[in-house]
Structures are given as structure tokens and as C-alpha cells.
Image 1 (cartoon, one colour):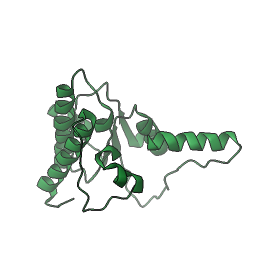
Image 2 (cartoon, rainbow, N blue to C red):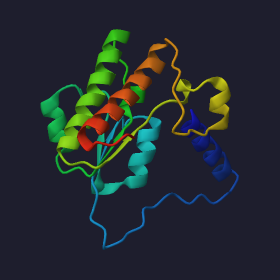
Image 3 (cartoon, helix red, strand yellow):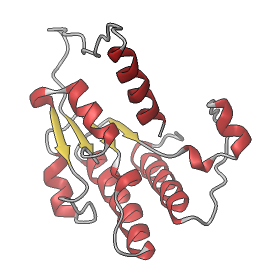
Length: 178
């Protein structure tokens, strides 16, 4: 919702004649080109990221066309990728809550595991402010001491499971405590 609110405010400002300067990555010939895989690229946030990053440097994957639980499929996706932005954990919804839990936790595990094995060093996982207590969410500040407090709402649990899965995969592959 935060992204949608931002885009609504930006569009309102543009309709009043304000000049909106889109984000453009800085071109630096000394940097190696990066290819970024974006899961959930058909979401509002995903479309904004694809537009901002643009061009051949993005592999955009919609939630409907992918099953991230399939290791062979995911291995083919992450080959030659420098970074992964995983939005599908927010947007993929299946027939039942059990299917959602399986898809999002196992899919996040397979994606992060295969990406790490392929040498991807940059991964971003989109999560949800719904994991905060309401009084914490108002502050929009997260410290390393924050501990999520998900409700039993399947959407909250799916986001929390994706966070735990990504954290433990990073810990296992890189020996760091994110």
C-alpha cells in the first residue's frame, strides 16, 4: 500500500503541473553490468522496479508464470544473474492457504538457495509491515532488535516464513547473521 500511496501522490502532483523526474541509474563504464531477476514483476511494485531498472538488465518474472519450488527451473532463472529482488513472496496466492505456505516458503528457499549456489551476492526480499505491532508500524523504523509478531492471518505468516527462510539460507551459505 505504501508504494501505491506514493504513486498516487506522485500522479496527483504531476496532474497539478509538478515536474516529476524519474529515477535513472547512473551510468558508469567502470562498473560491471548487473542483471537483476525480479520475481512478482507483474505487481505494482514490480512494474515500477522493472521500469526504473529497465532494459536488458532485468529478467522480469510474473507470479502467474512461475513455480519457484522447482529447483531445475530456478537454476535456469538465476544463471548469469547478479541480483535477485524477490517480490513474489508478497503477491503469489494460490487456491488454498496450505498451497500458499508451501509455495512461498519452499519457493523462497529454492530461490535463495539456488541463487546463492549460482554466486548471486545481492538479494532483496520484500516483506510486509503487517508483521509489526500497529504502534511499531507507525514509526516506519526497523532496528536489528525488532522481532516480528505475525498474527495467524495467512498473509502475515507467509511473509514471516519467507523472511525466516531467506535469513537462514543466507546464514547457511555465507556464514553471516543478516
